[in-house]
Length: 302
Image (tube, rainbow, N blue to C red):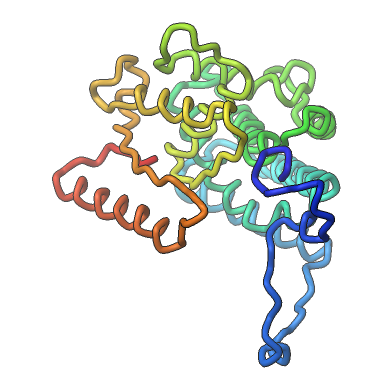
């Protein structure tokens, strides 16, 4: 939290509040009788929830013909791969950071990303010479775990350790002997190099990650918050995407069917309120409805 500049920290102020993720004010005495500690899920219960949710996601995708031509044995083995990938990621992030760093909400996000990547890889004919649904699913799993868990980690050493833990699951021909990061980084490099940017702007790792994550979240309709100190490419990635996604007038034909991007600004400060932030979202929703009424169906908001 401190490394990203998200929290105020003063070494001269020796206060236990410095170690809190956020400050919680004491409850009034009149409410103390209404406090209940429901505890947290046991590991076994969480694992049951994860595996059942995974099965539900895959079953839905089969009904909708998103997943086809895969036998029961392959599907069972792949379900186990998803389960192990998620459990390894959850356990590692909790171990290195905090038990609240990940939750069961991640599984819902996983399902949205996974479905998006299956459809995306189908559209670009990934592995068309292999004619293998399992290949598409494994590639999509690789990208989804990379986006959901790997990219949220700041520390390079932690990333390396997590990649080593995950690599055995992705040991096949397109991950180069089981290197978890090879395929996602190749995909990220290919797409971000096609985006419009001014001469002299180098695509360093941070910028590529910001660009690719923003782009994917926009296409998959998933909210995203980028946290970082000034100079880490947050505004720059925003502007590059805005200049790239122009609908039918996009310079590169790859982006012409991805919709036109509209933006809504909100400058946060010490006087910011939740009502002020809510008004920006309300305005975006109204604009979205107005665009639909005008017959525009291909657009996104940032």
